[in-house]
Length: 165
Image (cartoon, rainbow, N blue to C red):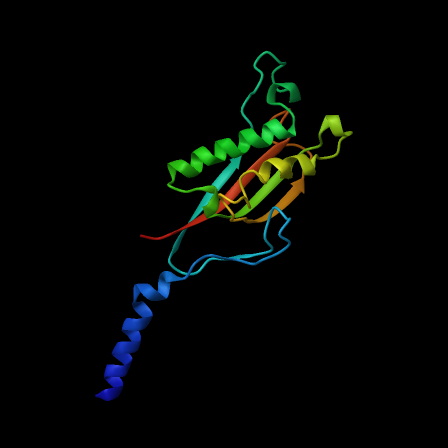
């Protein structure tokens, strides 16, 4: 009888909400880095896969599909993050809930065909790793030959998590 009571107590403990009170853990890395090396998500969280977003047209007077129509990498990264912020908000999420990101960058004509990684990171760092929002996601940045349309320099996709209700 005593072992049945112990098993019932153990089952109650394992199934209690306290077990699921664990928080998302972000492995500390270089404090100056715009990302963390790894993120661990415990049981009890919902996962959201946010499709890649690109920049909105910034200059309708510029030739359609040109880099001038979307802006430089700074303007495009800001536009993409604003777009993603809107999607996150509709889901009841914030940048603090993002645990992984993939950044795709195309050759920048103003950089002799290289990517402007530093400029993208400067804009990125206005949303991640700040005093107001200290959480940084795990992230990969990849140079690609092209994106869905001409003139686009960056596309970003997110994975976010939120504790289940």
